[in-house]
Image 1 (tube, rainbow, N blue to C red):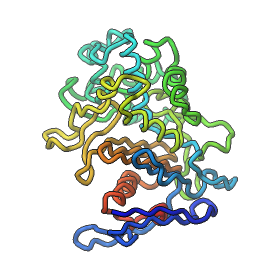
Image 2: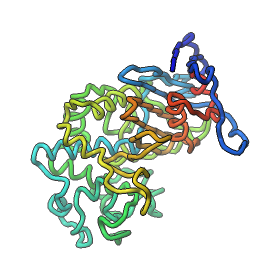
Image 3: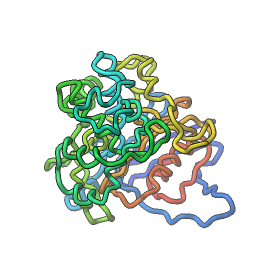
Image 4: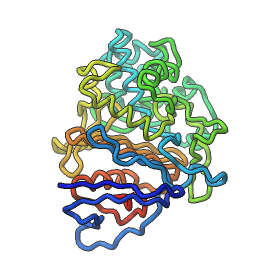
Length: 375
Protein backbone atom coordinates (compact mmCIF):
# COMPACT_ATOMS: atom_id res chain seq x y z
CA UNK A 1 0.00 0.00 0.00
CA UNK A 2 1.44 3.36 -1.03
CA UNK A 3 1.25 6.32 1.35
CA UNK A 4 2.14 9.82 0.20
CA UNK A 5 2.32 12.63 2.73
CA UNK A 6 2.67 16.31 1.93
CA UNK A 7 2.07 19.56 3.83
CA UNK A 8 1.06 22.66 1.91
CA UNK A 9 1.79 26.06 3.37
CA UNK A 10 1.85 27.39 6.93
CA UNK A 11 -1.35 29.40 7.25
CA UNK A 12 -2.97 30.50 10.55
CA UNK A 13 -3.89 27.75 13.00
CA UNK A 14 -6.65 25.48 11.72
CA UNK A 15 -6.51 26.80 8.15
CA UNK A 16 -3.48 25.12 6.64
CA UNK A 17 -3.99 22.10 4.41
CA UNK A 18 -2.19 18.79 4.55
CA UNK A 19 -2.96 16.02 2.09
CA UNK A 20 -2.56 12.34 2.77
CA UNK A 21 -3.23 9.95 -0.11
CA UNK A 22 -3.92 6.25 0.21
CA UNK A 23 -3.77 4.44 -3.09
CA UNK A 24 -6.53 2.05 -2.00
CA UNK A 25 -9.00 4.79 -1.00
CA UNK A 26 -8.04 7.48 -3.52
CA UNK A 27 -7.40 9.95 -0.71
CA UNK A 28 -10.99 10.01 0.51
CA UNK A 29 -12.27 9.76 4.08
CA UNK A 30 -15.37 7.56 3.89
CA UNK A 31 -18.24 7.40 6.35
CA UNK A 32 -18.65 3.65 6.81
CA UNK A 33 -21.31 3.58 9.51
CA UNK A 34 -23.57 0.59 8.85
CA UNK A 35 -27.14 0.93 7.73
CA UNK A 36 -26.73 4.33 6.09
CA UNK A 37 -26.97 6.21 9.39
CA UNK A 38 -27.02 9.99 8.96
CA UNK A 39 -23.63 11.68 9.15
CA UNK A 40 -22.67 13.46 12.36
CA UNK A 41 -22.34 17.23 11.76
CA UNK A 42 -18.75 18.21 11.04
CA UNK A 43 -17.00 20.37 13.57
CA UNK A 44 -13.71 22.15 13.92
CA UNK A 45 -11.01 20.78 16.13
CA UNK A 46 -9.07 22.91 18.61
CA UNK A 47 -5.81 21.54 19.95
CA UNK A 48 -2.69 19.73 18.80
CA UNK A 49 -2.16 16.39 17.11
CA UNK A 50 0.80 14.09 16.58
CA UNK A 51 0.78 10.93 14.47
CA UNK A 52 3.90 8.78 14.12
CA UNK A 53 4.71 5.38 12.73
CA UNK A 54 7.87 3.34 13.19
CA UNK A 55 9.62 6.26 14.92
CA UNK A 56 8.82 8.67 12.07
CA UNK A 57 6.58 11.64 12.85
CA UNK A 58 4.01 11.97 10.05
CA UNK A 59 1.92 14.80 11.47
CA UNK A 60 2.72 17.21 14.30
CA UNK A 61 0.55 20.30 14.26
CA UNK A 62 -1.67 22.71 16.18
CA UNK A 63 -5.19 23.78 15.19
CA UNK A 64 -7.07 26.94 16.05
CA UNK A 65 -6.37 28.96 19.16
CA UNK A 66 -4.54 28.23 22.37
CA UNK A 67 -5.67 31.66 23.58
CA UNK A 68 -8.62 33.19 21.76
CA UNK A 69 -8.35 36.63 23.36
CA UNK A 70 -4.67 37.11 22.53
CA UNK A 71 -4.92 35.21 19.21
CA UNK A 72 -2.16 32.77 20.16
CA UNK A 73 -2.39 29.66 17.99
CA UNK A 74 -1.97 26.09 19.14
CA UNK A 75 1.23 24.37 18.06
CA UNK A 76 3.10 21.12 18.77
CA UNK A 77 4.85 23.02 21.58
CA UNK A 78 1.66 24.22 23.29
CA UNK A 79 1.24 22.94 26.85
CA UNK A 80 -2.10 21.33 27.67
CA UNK A 81 -3.46 19.89 30.88
CA UNK A 82 -3.47 16.13 30.27
CA UNK A 83 -5.66 15.07 33.23
CA UNK A 84 -5.77 11.27 33.64
CA UNK A 85 -2.88 10.58 31.29
CA UNK A 86 -0.99 11.60 34.45
CA UNK A 87 -1.74 8.15 35.86
CA UNK A 88 0.74 6.35 33.61
CA UNK A 89 3.52 8.60 34.91
CA UNK A 90 2.56 7.87 38.52
CA UNK A 91 2.59 4.15 37.71
CA UNK A 92 6.10 4.53 36.28
CA UNK A 93 7.21 6.30 39.47
CA UNK A 94 5.98 3.33 41.51
CA UNK A 95 7.92 0.92 39.27
CA UNK A 96 11.08 3.01 39.57
CA UNK A 97 10.78 2.90 43.36
CA UNK A 98 10.18 -0.85 43.20
CA UNK A 99 13.43 -1.37 41.28
CA UNK A 100 15.23 0.72 43.92
CA UNK A 101 13.89 -1.48 46.71
CA UNK A 102 11.75 1.23 48.32
CA UNK A 103 8.50 -0.69 47.85
CA UNK A 104 6.89 -3.55 45.94
CA UNK A 105 3.58 -3.57 44.10
CA UNK A 106 2.44 -6.52 46.26
CA UNK A 107 3.00 -4.53 49.47
CA UNK A 108 -0.05 -3.78 51.53
CA UNK A 109 -1.08 -0.15 51.46
CA UNK A 110 -1.02 -0.06 55.27
CA UNK A 111 2.73 -0.79 55.25
CA UNK A 112 3.39 2.55 53.56
CA UNK A 113 0.47 4.75 54.60
CA UNK A 114 0.13 5.60 58.30
CA UNK A 115 -3.24 5.39 60.06
CA UNK A 116 -5.00 3.39 57.37
CA UNK A 117 -8.65 2.64 58.09
CA UNK A 118 -9.26 -1.01 58.92
CA UNK A 119 -11.28 -1.53 55.74
CA UNK A 120 -8.11 -0.83 53.74
CA UNK A 121 -6.14 -3.64 55.41
CA UNK A 122 -6.50 -6.08 52.43
CA UNK A 123 -5.57 -3.43 49.81
CA UNK A 124 -2.21 -3.72 48.06
CA UNK A 125 -0.42 -1.23 45.82
CA UNK A 126 -1.30 -3.58 42.95
CA UNK A 127 -4.99 -3.07 43.73
CA UNK A 128 -4.50 0.70 43.50
CA UNK A 129 -2.55 0.46 40.23
CA UNK A 130 -5.19 -1.75 38.59
CA UNK A 131 -8.29 0.04 39.95
CA UNK A 132 -9.41 -3.02 41.90
CA UNK A 133 -9.19 -1.62 45.45
CA UNK A 134 -12.88 -0.80 45.88
CA UNK A 135 -12.03 2.67 47.21
CA UNK A 136 -14.73 5.08 45.94
CA UNK A 137 -13.89 7.85 43.50
CA UNK A 138 -13.74 11.26 45.19
CA UNK A 139 -14.75 12.88 41.90
CA UNK A 140 -18.22 11.37 42.32
CA UNK A 141 -18.82 12.86 45.78
CA UNK A 142 -21.38 15.68 46.13
CA UNK A 143 -18.61 17.83 47.61
CA UNK A 144 -16.45 17.64 44.50
CA UNK A 145 -17.79 20.76 42.70
CA UNK A 146 -16.82 22.83 45.74
CA UNK A 147 -13.56 20.96 46.23
CA UNK A 148 -12.40 21.64 42.67
CA UNK A 149 -12.45 25.40 43.29
CA UNK A 150 -10.23 25.08 46.35
CA UNK A 151 -6.72 23.72 46.79
CA UNK A 152 -6.66 21.18 49.63
CA UNK A 153 -3.48 19.33 50.50
CA UNK A 154 -3.09 15.69 49.48
CA UNK A 155 -3.74 14.68 53.09
CA UNK A 156 -6.97 16.70 53.15
CA UNK A 157 -8.07 15.14 49.88
CA UNK A 158 -7.42 11.62 51.17
CA UNK A 159 -9.46 12.51 54.25
CA UNK A 160 -12.53 13.01 52.02
CA UNK A 161 -12.61 9.32 51.10
CA UNK A 162 -10.58 7.42 53.74
CA UNK A 163 -13.62 6.70 55.94
CA UNK A 164 -16.05 5.93 53.11
CA UNK A 165 -17.17 2.31 52.79
CA UNK A 166 -15.53 0.32 50.01
CA UNK A 167 -17.57 -0.19 46.85
CA UNK A 168 -16.53 -3.86 46.75
CA UNK A 169 -14.12 -6.34 48.32
CA UNK A 170 -10.57 -5.52 47.11
CA UNK A 171 -9.52 -7.64 44.15
CA UNK A 172 -13.00 -8.87 43.24
CA UNK A 173 -14.03 -6.22 40.70
CA UNK A 174 -12.76 -3.34 38.60
CA UNK A 175 -14.03 0.24 38.87
CA UNK A 176 -12.36 3.43 37.69
CA UNK A 177 -11.47 5.56 40.71
CA UNK A 178 -9.17 8.56 40.78
CA UNK A 179 -8.71 8.00 44.51
CA UNK A 180 -6.40 5.05 43.76
CA UNK A 181 -3.86 7.25 42.04
CA UNK A 182 -4.11 10.04 44.60
CA UNK A 183 -2.96 7.44 47.13
CA UNK A 184 -0.19 6.21 44.79
CA UNK A 185 1.05 9.77 44.33
CA UNK A 186 1.20 10.13 48.09
CA UNK A 187 3.06 6.80 48.39
CA UNK A 188 5.65 8.12 45.91
CA UNK A 189 6.17 11.10 48.20
CA UNK A 190 6.46 9.01 51.37
CA UNK A 191 8.74 6.36 49.85
CA UNK A 192 11.09 8.79 48.08
CA UNK A 193 11.28 11.67 50.53
CA UNK A 194 10.49 14.04 47.65
CA UNK A 195 7.24 15.62 46.58
CA UNK A 196 5.45 13.66 43.86
CA UNK A 197 6.19 16.40 41.32
CA UNK A 198 9.87 16.65 42.25
CA UNK A 199 10.31 12.88 42.03
CA UNK A 200 8.82 12.84 38.53
CA UNK A 201 10.94 15.82 37.50
CA UNK A 202 14.21 14.19 38.59
CA UNK A 203 13.46 10.61 37.60
CA UNK A 204 11.23 10.85 34.51
CA UNK A 205 11.02 14.32 32.97
CA UNK A 206 14.71 15.22 33.17
CA UNK A 207 16.10 11.85 32.00
CA UNK A 208 13.71 11.83 29.02
CA UNK A 209 14.28 15.55 28.29
CA UNK A 210 10.58 16.34 28.62
CA UNK A 211 11.18 20.08 28.81
CA UNK A 212 7.54 21.07 28.34
CA UNK A 213 6.06 18.66 30.86
CA UNK A 214 5.40 19.26 34.55
CA UNK A 215 3.62 17.81 37.54
CA UNK A 216 1.63 20.96 38.26
CA UNK A 217 -0.86 22.19 35.70
CA UNK A 218 -1.45 25.54 37.37
CA UNK A 219 -0.26 27.79 34.54
CA UNK A 220 1.50 31.07 34.98
CA UNK A 221 1.02 34.01 32.65
CA UNK A 222 2.69 32.31 29.71
CA UNK A 223 1.97 31.99 26.02
CA UNK A 224 3.16 28.39 26.27
CA UNK A 225 -0.01 27.25 28.05
CA UNK A 226 -3.30 26.69 26.29
CA UNK A 227 -6.37 28.17 27.94
CA UNK A 228 -9.20 25.68 28.42
CA UNK A 229 -12.58 26.47 26.87
CA UNK A 230 -16.08 25.17 27.56
CA UNK A 231 -17.40 26.63 24.31
CA UNK A 232 -15.75 28.08 21.23
CA UNK A 233 -15.12 31.41 23.00
CA UNK A 234 -16.00 30.91 26.69
CA UNK A 235 -13.19 29.98 29.07
CA UNK A 236 -13.86 26.98 31.29
CA UNK A 237 -14.12 27.29 35.05
CA UNK A 238 -10.63 26.57 36.28
CA UNK A 239 -10.39 23.28 38.13
CA UNK A 240 -7.62 23.60 40.71
CA UNK A 241 -6.97 19.89 40.46
CA UNK A 242 -3.35 20.10 41.52
CA UNK A 243 -4.69 18.84 44.82
CA UNK A 244 -5.07 15.51 42.98
CA UNK A 245 -1.35 14.88 42.56
CA UNK A 246 -0.85 11.46 41.06
CA UNK A 247 -4.19 11.17 39.28
CA UNK A 248 -4.56 14.16 36.98
CA UNK A 249 -2.50 17.27 37.64
CA UNK A 250 0.10 17.19 34.84
CA UNK A 251 0.59 19.29 31.72
CA UNK A 252 2.48 18.31 28.58
CA UNK A 253 2.72 18.72 24.80
CA UNK A 254 2.19 16.28 21.94
CA UNK A 255 5.94 16.27 21.29
CA UNK A 256 6.84 15.47 24.89
CA UNK A 257 4.19 12.75 25.10
CA UNK A 258 5.67 11.26 21.94
CA UNK A 259 9.06 11.10 23.67
CA UNK A 260 7.36 9.40 26.60
CA UNK A 261 5.65 6.91 24.29
CA UNK A 262 8.96 6.13 22.64
CA UNK A 263 10.35 5.23 26.06
CA UNK A 264 7.52 2.93 27.12
CA UNK A 265 7.50 1.04 23.81
CA UNK A 266 11.28 0.83 23.53
CA UNK A 267 12.95 -2.62 23.55
CA UNK A 268 15.65 -0.98 25.66
CA UNK A 269 13.92 1.39 28.13
CA UNK A 270 16.09 3.68 30.22
CA UNK A 271 13.91 4.34 33.27
CA UNK A 272 13.30 0.72 34.33
CA UNK A 273 14.20 -2.72 33.01
CA UNK A 274 12.20 -4.25 30.19
CA UNK A 275 10.76 -6.91 32.49
CA UNK A 276 9.59 -4.25 34.95
CA UNK A 277 8.11 -2.17 32.14
CA UNK A 278 6.11 -5.18 30.96
CA UNK A 279 4.25 -5.09 34.28
CA UNK A 280 2.74 -1.77 33.21
CA UNK A 281 1.20 -3.31 30.07
CA UNK A 282 -0.01 -6.59 31.51
CA UNK A 283 -3.83 -6.89 31.23
CA UNK A 284 -4.55 -7.66 34.88
CA UNK A 285 -8.31 -7.29 34.95
CA UNK A 286 -11.07 -6.84 32.39
CA UNK A 287 -13.03 -3.65 32.81
CA UNK A 288 -16.28 -5.51 32.10
CA UNK A 289 -16.87 -8.66 34.15
CA UNK A 290 -17.23 -11.85 32.12
CA UNK A 291 -15.94 -10.25 28.92
CA UNK A 292 -13.99 -12.17 26.28
CA UNK A 293 -10.19 -12.52 26.22
CA UNK A 294 -9.71 -9.63 23.76
CA UNK A 295 -12.01 -7.23 25.58
CA UNK A 296 -10.69 -4.13 27.30
CA UNK A 297 -8.49 -4.65 30.35
CA UNK A 298 -6.51 -2.40 32.68
CA UNK A 299 -2.78 -2.47 33.38
CA UNK A 300 -0.90 0.14 35.38
CA UNK A 301 -2.29 3.47 34.18
CA UNK A 302 -3.18 2.13 30.71
CA UNK A 303 -6.22 0.54 29.12
CA UNK A 304 -5.25 -2.51 27.07
CA UNK A 305 -7.36 -4.06 24.36
CA UNK A 306 -8.06 -4.26 20.66
CA UNK A 307 -9.40 -1.69 18.21
CA UNK A 308 -10.29 -2.82 14.72
CA UNK A 309 -8.67 -6.15 15.54
CA UNK A 310 -5.36 -4.49 16.40
CA UNK A 311 -3.62 -4.50 19.76
CA UNK A 312 -4.04 -1.10 21.40
CA UNK A 313 -2.91 0.50 24.66
CA UNK A 314 -4.35 3.88 25.51
CA UNK A 315 -5.62 6.33 28.07
CA UNK A 316 -7.70 9.45 27.85
CA UNK A 317 -8.02 12.45 30.13
CA UNK A 318 -10.73 15.00 30.85
CA UNK A 319 -10.68 18.10 33.02
CA UNK A 320 -12.46 21.43 32.74
CA UNK A 321 -11.51 22.96 29.39
CA UNK A 322 -9.30 20.08 28.25
CA UNK A 323 -9.52 16.62 26.70
CA UNK A 324 -6.60 14.33 25.90
CA UNK A 325 -5.93 10.97 24.30
CA UNK A 326 -2.74 8.93 24.03
CA UNK A 327 -3.02 5.80 21.87
CA UNK A 328 -0.34 3.27 20.97
CA UNK A 329 -0.61 0.34 18.58
CA UNK A 330 2.49 -1.66 19.58
CA UNK A 331 2.29 -4.32 16.87
CA UNK A 332 1.94 -1.69 14.14
CA UNK A 333 4.37 0.88 15.52
CA UNK A 334 1.68 3.57 15.39
CA UNK A 335 1.28 6.43 17.88
CA UNK A 336 -1.64 8.88 17.88
CA UNK A 337 -1.72 11.74 20.42
CA UNK A 338 -4.52 14.30 20.55
CA UNK A 339 -4.65 17.17 23.05
CA UNK A 340 -7.57 19.60 22.98
CA UNK A 341 -8.33 22.80 24.88
CA UNK A 342 -12.06 22.53 24.17
CA UNK A 343 -13.97 20.19 26.49
CA UNK A 344 -17.30 20.05 24.65
CA UNK A 345 -16.44 17.13 22.36
CA UNK A 346 -16.94 13.87 24.22
CA UNK A 347 -15.98 11.94 21.07
CA UNK A 348 -12.27 12.67 21.28
CA UNK A 349 -11.24 9.05 21.73
CA UNK A 350 -13.34 8.14 18.68
CA UNK A 351 -11.58 10.90 16.79
CA UNK A 352 -8.16 9.58 17.84
CA UNK A 353 -9.16 6.08 16.77
CA UNK A 354 -10.35 7.54 13.46
CA UNK A 355 -6.92 9.01 12.79
CA UNK A 356 -5.41 5.60 13.48
CA UNK A 357 -8.04 3.98 11.25
CA UNK A 358 -6.88 5.99 8.26
CA UNK A 359 -3.57 4.16 8.44
CA UNK A 360 -5.31 0.79 8.75
CA UNK A 361 -7.61 1.33 5.76
CA UNK A 362 -10.83 2.29 7.53
CA UNK A 363 -12.00 5.70 8.73
CA UNK A 364 -15.04 7.76 9.57
CA UNK A 365 -14.03 11.37 9.00
CA UNK A 366 -17.51 12.82 8.84
CA UNK A 367 -17.35 14.54 12.20
CA UNK A 368 -14.32 16.80 11.89
CA UNK A 369 -13.16 19.28 9.28
CA UNK A 370 -9.66 19.35 10.80
CA UNK A 371 -7.35 17.54 11.07
CA UNK A 372 -9.16 14.77 9.17
CA UNK A 373 -8.74 16.89 6.05
CA UNK A 374 -5.00 16.53 6.50
CA UNK A 375 -5.15 12.98 5.26
